[in-house]
Length: 221
Ligand SMILES: [Cu+2]
View 1 (cartoon, helix red, strand yellow):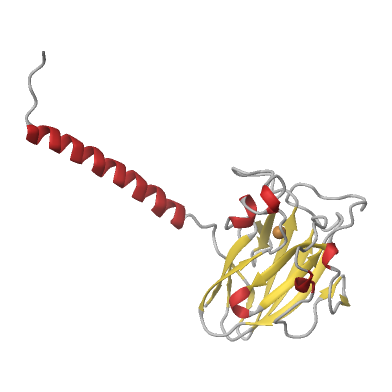
View 2: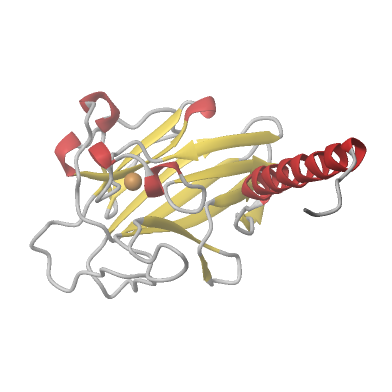
């Protein structure tokens, strides 16, 4: 028989255990919410700026090397694994997306039509009023700004495909350009609406719901 513990000591040890558990849960939630890729700024300055992105079939690095992903080019020309973008307020933003992934297809053909743009979307230099939804590999959509652009995938049989980032422009790709206007400052979610997450139920989950892959934020400053 050990020394009998007092009621107060037992309560204190239970309370300490609960506090420790609550602290760990809080730490997990806060660190989950705080983890953000570094923001990549648009090139140029108000009232005109430009963003350059690429999409790849698999990232090749980090905790999920086989996940499909966007990357962003910083103003120094280096590709960053980030989907947190910064652009000036009340500006015309020109976006160039190098699309290295093959098509998955849109579940809702409505999104084959680009929305919310200034001027037309171009694919490989040619204006395209609407994309065959079966050819979409990803979309670049900022719902709160009314912007949605389908990105044409690389044909399945294309030669010299890039399967792992970083991809180079000597490899098979389509180049999509478009312009949209920013308004007042704020943080706006953007994401892909093609269910492109291979290996996940219905193609959603995983990269489709993770900032840094198929989701991001546009910070208008
Ligand atoms: Cu996607």
